[in-house]
Structures are given as structure tokens and as C-alpha cells.
Length: 457
Image (cartoon, rainbow, N blue to C red; front, top):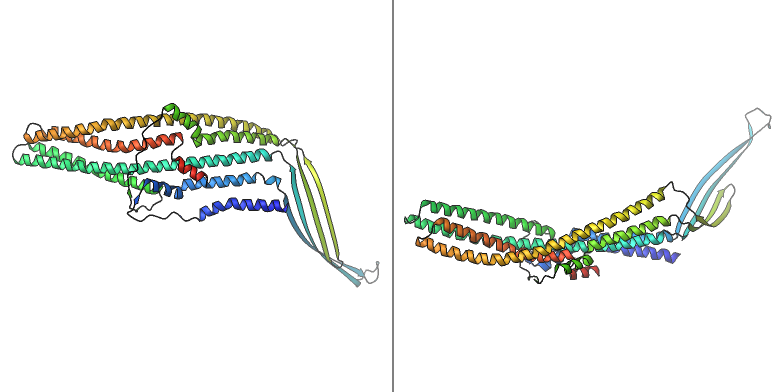
């Protein structure tokens, strides 16, 4: 019995220690201002500092404690008691005997006693049919928490990758916007020179200036959008708001995309959120078994020992003990068990509906992600041709304008078409990389090596 209690205490302390270590662990070191943070380094920092990941990890530790808590009914319960009492009395004898009505007394007798009674109670459950389903339910809850933790890690890493690529995208769009502004300013300079020479109308200069200011607005918007994207990424990485750093383009993802049917099949077996909902069904089934087990009898043994020490006018010492085994047979609980049983059936049905609903959601997410990859790839192929054609058209029309065979409106239209297609292509290139990662996230294999490594810690 003593060894069993020591084992329980040691196990609980062992389970609590990772949580205490997690709370006491220092936050990851903030990188130096101005340094470059790669995507791989960003992944590692997010895993060490992102709050939702740490909260999901704590849920695993809590679930493990609940698993051991489900076994505590089979461990002995020992209770110590101590009681102390004090009493006293006095008696008086009249001087004249029993018939004397005077108020004189021939003698007085006093007595007192102090009593201390320590005791100990030992109770051991011998048979309880609710323990096994309760332990299975807690074990399934631990597994569910672990799956939720893995899904949280994948979600955070994907959100990080998306934010990281959004910064790269906005940087590239800003670069294109600045180049577009320079081209517009160059066209304004050409129009101004031709107008000064009497070869162009004043409207050519005004239209060119409108184009310059329009591209300046695009550049200002791109600068602010980049600042917002950097702020979003910094929050995911838990960096100070005024921290300055650079991001670099990661290696491109493999572009071979399997057939949709294979991806869907993989998702149904790999998505942790779907597996967790399947465990909820099993957990509720065990909950129903636990309710049914409440109808069964339980057996327990109990022993009590007491010692009473009395000091005072007279002293005495008395000890007593008793031991008993009793069987509890539940007969009526006012209908509460029947209510719990009916409720457990509802929980099972609800869990199955949740699983079916999530399965449809997963199917749609995989379909949308797969189609998005195809869409972004087609956009890049089309925009690459479009940018080259727009560049060549702009150069040709600009040369014609210098020769006086085309109008300023045609040049500015060609310039706007070139700038728009370049901005669109710059964004689509990074959207395609995000789409490839989104497809992996939708089937539950994004950053699988990192997730598996965390799972074995």
C-alpha cells in the first residue's frame, strides 16, 4: 500500500514537471536588429514561442493528469483524525445533612478530565466497474489532445508561411511599383520635352503627369501594405513591433501535384482534426459504458482505529478498532442515471454528425486547394507571356511616339498595361508557392517532419 501511494505521488509529480518547465522556460532569444530571418528559422521560433502551440501542449499534460486521475478510485484512501475534549465538574455537600436548610457546606468535590483521541481511517475500493471505462475515456482524451496539438502546430506553421510569403510578395510589388513610377516619370519627361519643342500638346504632359501620380499612389499603398504584412509576421514570431529584419526567398516547392483522388484519400487518413473527431465518438461510447457501469454493485473495505487518552482526576487509556467489507448496490438515484444514459446516446449521435460534417469540410478544402494550385500555375504561365508582350508593345509605341507616329494616350495605355501585368505577375508567383503549401496543409502533411519530431519529444 505504501509503495502504491509513493508510485502515485511520483507519477503525478513527473507529469507536472513538463508543465512547470514549460512555464519556467525563457522565451526564445530575440534576433539582432537588422538580421535576416529565413523561413526555416521562422518555423523554429514560432514552435518555441507561439502561444496557441504552447497552450495545446499544456492541454496534453492536463489530459495525462486526468488519465491518472481516473485511476485514483482504486488507490487506498487514508484519513487521520485527532480530537481533543476537556470537561470538569464540582459537587457540594450541606453541613446539616439532607434536611438542613442552612447555606453552610461541609465539603466540596471537584473533578476534571482532558481527553485526546487520535484515529486513522483506511478505505480501499475492491471492485468498481466504472474505473475501466473511465480510464479508457481519459486515455482517448489524451490521444485527442495530442492530435489537436499536432493540428495546431500545422495550422500555425502554415499561417506563418503564408504571412512570410505575403511579406515577400509585398516587397516584390513595391519594387515593381517603384520601377513603374520611374517609367512614368521618364514618359513625363519625354512628353514635356516634346511639348517644349512644339511637337506635342499640353494635354500629353497633363496625361503623363496623371499617370505619374497614379503610380505614386500605387507605390505608397504598396509601402503601407508591406508595413502591415511585416507587423502580422512579427506578431506570429513574437517580435517587438519596432524590430527590423529582412526575409529571403525560400527554395521553391516541388510542383508535381498528384491526382485529386489520391490527395483526398491521404487527407482522410492524415488530417488530425478529423482523427480527433473520430476519437470523440469512441470517447462518448466509453462514457456510455461508464454510465451503464453505475448500475453494477461496488465493493469496498474499510478499517478504523482509535486511541483515547484521558488525563485528569482519573487517568485511562482505551483503544478500539473495527474493519468491514461492504457492498453497495444502487437501486434508485431519482432517475439521474437514466438521464445520463439518454444524454450519452445524444452525445454519440452528435459526435458522429460532427465527424461527417468535418469530413465534408475536409473534402471541400482539398478540392479548393487543388484547384487553386492549378489556377495559380495557369495564371503565372499566362502572365509571363502577357508581361513580355506588354513590355514589347510599350517599347514599340514609345519609339513611335518619339517619332511622332503615335499618341500620348496610346503610350500611357501601354505603360499602364505593362505596370498592371508586372504587379499581377509578381503577386501570383508568391501566391503559387502559398497555394502549394496550402494543398499540403489541407491533406494534413504540411511540415510533417517537424510535427513528427515534436510528437516524439
